[in-house]
Image (tube, rainbow, N blue to C red; front, side):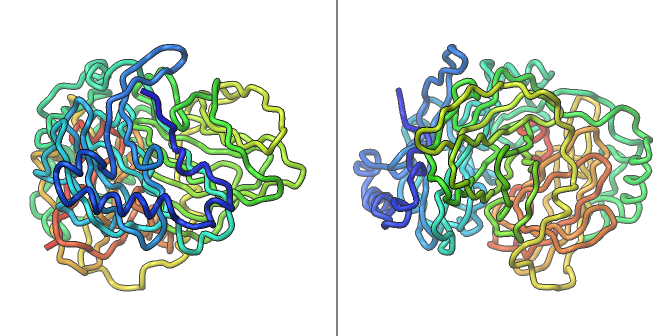
Length: 513
């Protein structure tokens, strides 16, 4: 089977500004499809299919999420995602609408007791799309096999600019179950999440007193562990070297890294106009890999993170953790040329990317391995970000310490418990909630909350007015505090977006009542 990845977003500026015929058609088709099961299956809004992907000359099983005009959805602010989702693949489907804060909890199967959509069956969805660069992906191990796609809603104020959507993936010819076996994973520790199992790595990294036996049942903010001061004190002690070992990344060995399902040996080439602006909407769909982005020869500015506008920030290198998105605005020179967007693996030399090229430009091959390895993600770039429309100042109604941990047997924990043994954080709708993530493990954790955007309000002890996001990196030994107003009633997952950490148990939920 062949398809055109992201074909719906490879438009020039005139096409993007000339109307929304294709987008309007997808919405209308979805509504018509919802009237009867027959028409639903004839013309679904989204179809998830099994496919074969060729990487480095070798075929592998993968999945694709197809919309009316190609892979994924590209809509406009104010439109709804309305229609049928058909699972035409050979696996049960649990699809998550990542970043969609208006999607009702019952329309997102990635929720406690949400179940899966069986092969050949359909779900109906109907909700207002959240503006910005978002995505949809499996909330099971099939995410590793590229079961993910863009879900981009162009902002009303996006202006006269060409959009280029780039989705990054880490890729393995082995199945995710084989990867789990390599890591030492077994089913059971991630109980309650559809049999995802858990991943296995370096045991023994939990400080004494912070494992399952050391976490108190009744602590600050509603019964989720020891008081904040004690946790922070223990955390900063760990930061001084109490744990031993060194911070690391990339616990899964991948065969390739992809940008829009292609390697840098055969990259996608996007035609752009001389002297024109281009907005790169980059989605890290990698399951266990963070990247650093660069655009040699151009001066990119970050204008949004996780689909939410921020005060523009110029930089030469942009970190992007698993699940995160970033919008980079560049102005192409009048002389034109070839301009690669490179995504280099953190802590490594491997990289992938796409190429922007003006008409007639000669494109040379770009090595898949950089001259030097990049370091590990930290919070330096995060500290420079500020939301364009921050949360209104307000005292928190609830304050929760959230200790991220690792126990022998490579059980990844939140406040000393794996998913299935966890206690949800319970809040009331409309309350201002603050959570401080603390990470005494040796790996970073990109922490994501479903159904909400939050603001980063402190890095370590330093409070500031940071970016609005839905996924934040929590590196070893540096507490990160977020704030959000509890949204729609329901139970929303809170988890690490490293697939195998989540499968290993690093997931709980926020229950809004």
